[in-house]
Length: 159
Length: 109
Image (cartoon, helix red, strand yellow):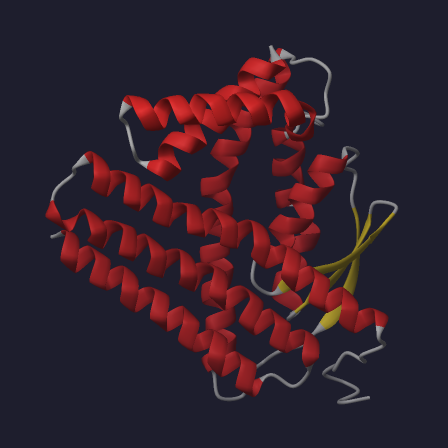
């Protein structure tokens, strides 16, 4: 089962990148994707078997991306306003944020989301405590409300 | 129609690149400069590259053109994975080397 999924993902990438749809190039793709799947099928997924909830996670993650884009857009406008205003009202500070997430992948997704959102950078994670650099009080408040954490927890089925 | 839309996207993207550069020049210390450049780029690159992908479809929705646009959009995906990782790595390296953050009260300590 895992072989088939890895093979299909690789082959979809082959078709997109090569753009050649004749029999010769497609059969080359089948051969090389087959070799790569046989050699390194366990790199892509560390789990031993697929559960229905993993498909749920993928779909929820796809719906999480537009919300993240919207947040990036909002806070980018906020940062642009700060940068372009003549007296530049910044108040940079480091904030400790205690997160309730448990899985490694949700930590990775959450810290990357924090760093993608302008005004905040995750510099370190120590035992679920995030050490975040904030550009001013408003973005720090936005972070401490924990909306984004709830969304990430929802995506990876931790709520 | 597509041309107008992609020009608007270019302009918006260039605006965010511009604020990122102004922020780089105006910010007081290392971490704030990371904020300005590492971040203004993400939205700026997203808008500019989306504009390019749309402009590529200008001559009709053939399969080849759609594939090229898809490849262009993959650049955005890679930027969105790589950018926060690199920003975090640089900021953490700065912290490990003991770069003192600038604060509003203390000024440059």
